Length: 320
Image (cartoon, rainbow, N blue to C red; front, top):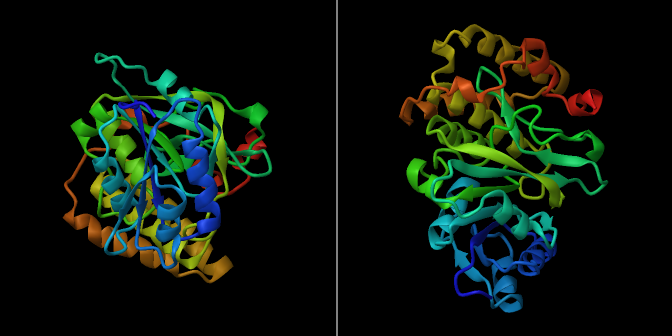
């Protein structure tokens, strides 16, 4: 491996040796070498020991307590010094050219204000898993093109706000300026918050045009598990307060949407977990510094009706 790789690949891990093994192997088998940093977040099994035995060439860090996704990523990012950072979920299998594509998207240019790159990820069935994120005027974030056929994607329409967390690429100079993930967020929404802060500091985002990997999805918290719903709700409540959305001109719309979503989940799914998560996040948001939502970074074409439809799995499929 090159003595000074251009990218640090950071892989947060919480158990699941079977998919972790495949993820780490793909990260090592890149056409352009990178430093691979694996951070074990106090796995409930022997995954960390297996990584140490199978992949002595990686940098393995072990959290003494379970810190959550955001903090664990921060630990990994702090352990490297390459000019680019690529965060990779442990249930992602990278294509061999993923690192090369990231380097091409974010060239070594000190004058550049492109601070991140959104990656095109596929689902196991060949459909699009994600292609970065967008947000509406209430600060609600959405994954671009989730579920759509690959033929339907577009790099810049709708405008990409930032990378989706499953595989996110950042310029370290940008992170040095605005900071890494907000550690009040355990999991979910941390990449949205960072995208807002980067855009507020006038750092842009580009979209990598070719698929960089396949995302299994839901391996850490479980797809639509109770834990996932609570943590997602927490992030929404927290960011609403952190960015002062309810005090803005869009406050009534935000309240209306959250009420509709919460009542729908309660009636249709008998789900109180999401609402409780929102309340917990709102309370935690009192500790966060107040930041203005960068309205020039949001997609103003996402109206109320569209924002409600985008919360369903079929929006991007219908749009295609």
